Length: 269
Image (cartoon, rainbow, N blue to C red; front, side, top):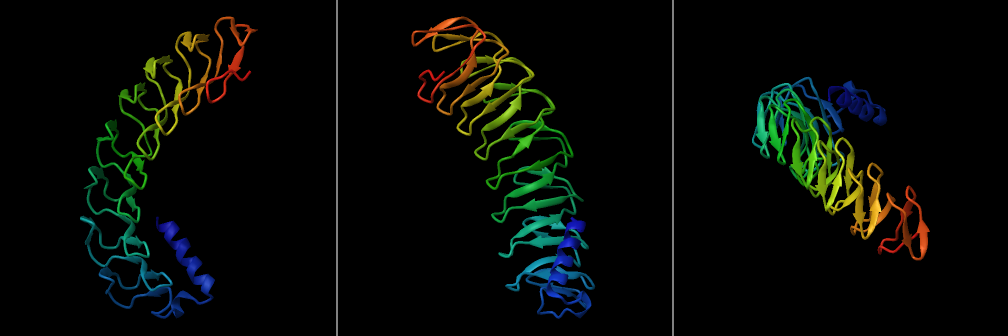
């Protein structure tokens, strides 16, 4: 964060064509002559303060420990704010539980403008959205509070699948699984999918793609194990590889042939 902050400050200084030493208090970047409270935030002398064009505080360094949003930020720590005055980024003085998740001290924590956590590091082994996650894991969240993705510490059953330890489970913003790696053969929406393969979903929870663990009958046709099945978001099959010869619309199709369908379920080719 310090590197990014420095780069941002230099950009502000050079874009204005005025050196930091010659900045005036009404400019976007200033150095404080003494510890000063600005917009309710105690800021440290001889440290750079950055303002938005509106005059609202953007960046400052704390002159003392300060509590904000129920957690303590340390003296000497840099805080970044949204123009609305809401906290955007800082470093925790102590481990702190925020929105039911324990976050680690000494690590950056980022907030959305609505107050939800955007990113933080776990202070301890934790259960997040029903999944056990290791200490020191960096977590990213959507602006509604749902986690973007996790690596489970142990196989976990969610949304019909048994998901593999140590493999990322990615989520949609609505909390439904986007994709993950199966830790065991799993029956999802009536189909047995193969362990150690990726199963992918649409955001409505319907299966998008997967690898069947056995020959699978769908709408009277038998599809080959180990070959991808692809679906539309309405649940209809889009494509698959035939395990047995069949006849579709008076046309004989050999086993091993990949067939495709339209979204309404009718044969395409």
